[in-house]
Amino acid sequence: MAYSDIDILARIVQCEAGGEGETGMKAVACVVMNRVHITYGEYGRLEHTIRAIVYQPGQFDCVRETVGGKYNTQTIYNMRPDQVHYDIASWAIAGNRLTNLGFALWYFNPFTTECRQYFPSRVGRFVIRIGDHCFYNPTDAYADT
Image (cartoon, rainbow, N blue to C red; front, side, top):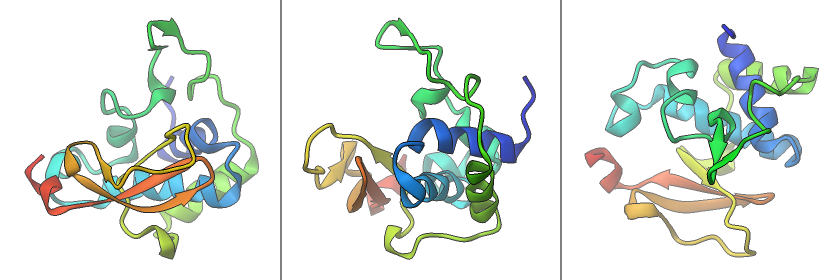
């Protein structure tokens, strides 16, 4: 399927953070857009498009056919975004960001009440927890990725 950038972003927002409320969904959209706009490190070497960021191998469970060796039923291909998902995607594409998020490039659900201080390999430092997700800003070590 050939989705437009707004479709891809709306679908990833719904799939990755649909149960996290508006702020959680906006935070995920911000991470994607932060990766699109960064000029250094791993993401800086990619084409600066939503499509390139979302489809980069191993980045989002919602674009993987299998997770943990099992068929993944929750993918962007199975999503049917509502207007709120498109509104959030448009908001982020227009350059809006959550101020308390910083320039977060990663998030994950630790399935515990605490967020670890650093993202793997110390490329990211914890900045905020929103809903079930911990968000991380890049450290100086990220530039070498």
